[in-house]
Length: 357
Ligand code: SIN
Image (tube, rainbow, N blue to C red; front, side):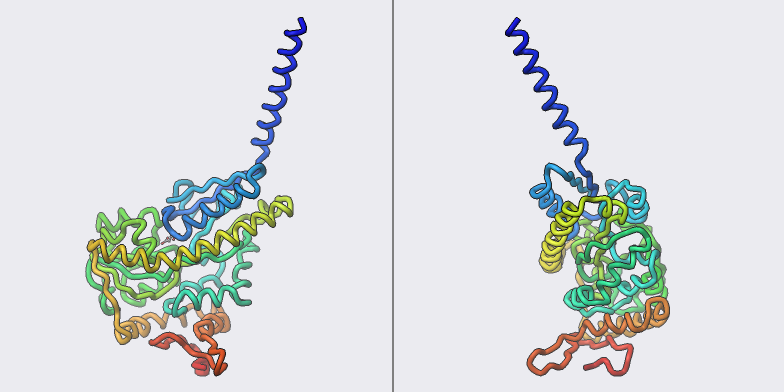
């Protein structure tokens, strides 16, 4: 009888422990992080770093699952899904927010930033930080910017001069500025999801596209495009977002810890972005599957001259002052002489007469 009582007691204790553990598992906060690129990209690696940091620090309270390669949602659906609570974190390109807010169209203006360092200076400044808040009225919180890199133009025929674009079909992200950019060059822009690009290129349903090196390499676009022009004509950068409802529902300590993990993951992602601009570009060249066309300063200037008229069309929507602030981020202050130096050889970026420092 005594033995039976002991066995019963052990069983009851095990059941209680099991059910407590089960409840704990059940009550864990679940974060689904959905994105469209491969894992071996700045965004893919940033997402995994975020998961790792959260698991280290909040592992018993928060569960992060990362869904790359449009497994869960494409960019066109992910923000709606976020508002419905089906996904908690995403990082669409800034171009994909432009249909929600005119101001963010800024980031798509061709040849706005000379390089990623200029984009970083702008984003960390007052205007960039204000733009991060523009999605608040849509129920989304901007947690930070993440870099990928400058875009390159690719096609199956060489794109040496702007007139080479004429008559060709290009996939673009869902952005009216990008639409106008190709119209200005007499090309035909088609708004398509990222997940469709490889097949569209392979089947020759489109002639070309614009992407940063890491997206070209990780999605093998260079294997179905004979030429890539190193145009560096625009930006592929991201806004990491969550829904206000989800974010505000969190215990403040957990929220702070998640934000800290996100800040660190973004810093790491930005380092990856810097490396990949060099290593993925080189891997593409080494693959010999495509020809990379480098532009001389003079040739690049033709592209700038052809595309800059796009700015005027969006100036009212975006705001001339905001455009000017972004242009000014191309000026690097020389600490010794205290003068602004525009470090772009082609020095295009002035919409006001007085911006050459
Ligand atoms: C991404 O980098 O998230 C996708 C970019 C694109 O849609 O071209």
